[in-house]
Image 1 (cartoon, rainbow, N blue to C red):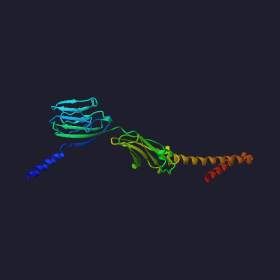
Image 2: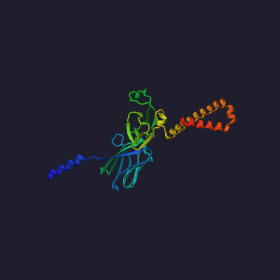
Image 3: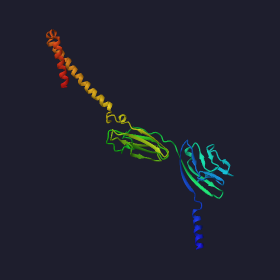
Image 4: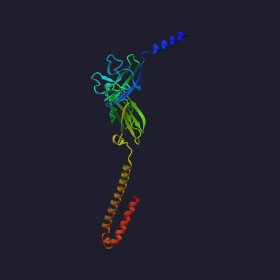
Length: 283
């Protein structure tokens, strides 16, 4: 039984030897990120290496004798800060080239080894919307049965996704690491709804609302102001027609009854106005 126990422990040690904990960290270009050791107080020397797992991996920071810190190379010049108590490493003013593997090694015999997979993202660009020309080679197969279709585009980047949304609901989306720009067409079906095009990556997002009146003026629903203006225009037109007919009738009556009108101006005026108002009601 004793031999079996020792054999089990030996196998367990062999299988787990050299294994390191891996943590994934995301950062934004221009910002600061800290790689935490999760240790309250280090008791041994600390070594940080980058880019871990490659042939070009080099030591970038070192803590020895619990208080002496040394930084190496020009790549991270004035951008690294090593915590002498915890061994955590802070990287300032990030750029996308800082992405990669960082290894923390504590103790000369690798008492503790942690690998951080750092991914640095830039700010996503603001999308742009324009009318869709279905003759474009990339969108000839786009099923546009509507008289109004638009295209949203954005500059591509690391893990950028482009999507169309309507009232908060995602209608379609696209992403591709191989393209310089992402484009996504939309066939507008509900002109009273609010559409928006959104571009996003893991650390930022940008959106642009679609103005259907600008891109689809022939189909956009009239606004309340437009409806009121139209009603006033109709009423104004009706009033103008009534006024023209009234004046024409008065001129005709004046020609036929010029002498009588001169004798009885008050009676003539009253009758003429009564006729005008009756015409307005009928119209």
